[in-house]
Image 1 (cartoon, rainbow, N blue to C red):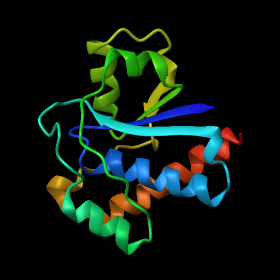
Image 2: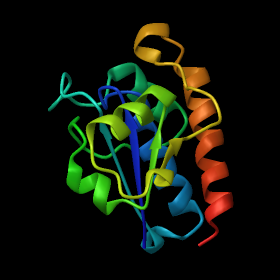
Image 3: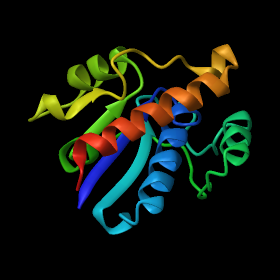
Length: 145
């Protein structure tokens, strides 16, 4: 089973959107038993909060099921456990490498080759959804479990 962890700043917009999108893509391909997918943030400022409502609305509008969850900060155990840690911005990768012991730094990478803008600030959940969807599809294509 491949363990995939999405990481953004607070774990209420981008990383939970990516978690739900990848889970749905995996379900549609009949690969549920092949992946363990989760998300978290590099900050604890949103800890315990639900997915931001505009992010939920976008997922609902795209027929992406949303699981009950609470925002949380990444732990050293997750750094050690997950096979692929997909961050939304290069600065998130830099933060993880600086703040945690990472035995295999290559397992931490951006979901796309560029930063995915934080929709908390931009309000552009449509573009963020499309970029995350693209990144998740590319991820699945490259893994081919």
